Length: 64
Length: 410
Image (cartoon, rainbow over all chains, first blue to last red; front, side, top):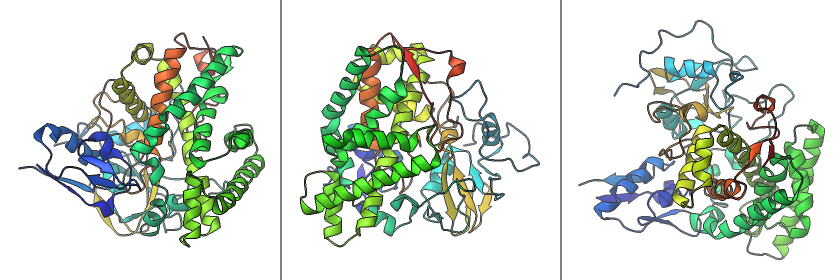
């Protein structure tokens, strides 16, 4: 899978970090940062949760 | 897929229902029965407000999320059609960026996002734990019964906000006294207004001090924006006041109302009391956020361009009200929605709203509630209500729902 993040849409809710700590982090201003663009399949559920809870629709999951 | 409520109730009612609606006297934790009926009829319906205006009420989860995330709705109270909350004479000032639209909203919001990043909030956890433990020590050493609202639920967020903003310890009593008056049931509007001005004046002076001598706190960060010419002193004070107001009464009511809900569901309370598992505590916080309904008057917006949704067309200039509590009881998303179940996965609730205005302080709120729910019942395992359940007074008329007082003993 491939994860896409549009950081300019991010509203710094931190929800993606709570959902998938191995895949997302935040910069000094709380804006989301992608740690792994192609995380392993074991992270699929948590990335899906991050996509679902992101209030700004800034995360997309491209499943292959 | 059809909504589970599709076809449950025949056609819409004849008259436009009035909003807000009364709760059933015996069900203070459930949405008003009329609201649930409207949800069964369809995702959107017109309601009538105190001023005779007829905005849309959105009753289902999917449509609420879609609209809260839609740039064609405005959070600006000056946009034509915005459904006003206040009754005549009630007053409703603009409160910094939560009542603005992008791009100005985003510009101002990003100035204060840093301290709410997950890692920075986690770094505050030991401080919040100490605040909670100290207050519980005082409770245990004090007389019984005690009002949990006054002795515990209100001081927790007030002291946490002091830490966050950088209010010096010597000023904590002044800060707590005035923030308490700002939300106190017996305070007159004049007293509340005076307390708000006291706090605003205090924050303004503290900002001036941080301008001269910056420290590592949130107020110094805001002061830095003044220095950089990005905002003026008045905007900075408004922002600090917003952070205080947004995090104070909301969190306090979650603590008191949540405790009452748990006392009425002893099996669920026992789960929290007997666990050392932070995951269960975190899950319990999400479920209580879903189940309780602090912002019961709804998130409000005005439509700026026609929007087709849920079989209706919302016209530019019309108002929209999203009552999150009814979305959080949508059976399409949360099976058996009226049951409090701390073990369910409730993370997709909209208690903090949705879209670009979703609560900025939610990581802090979550952490505070995790500390409180994970500590209070463990340290006072025999905690019980010290009045008849029917004597608890609920804040049906307040902006933020909760209980006026919660007499407890142990």
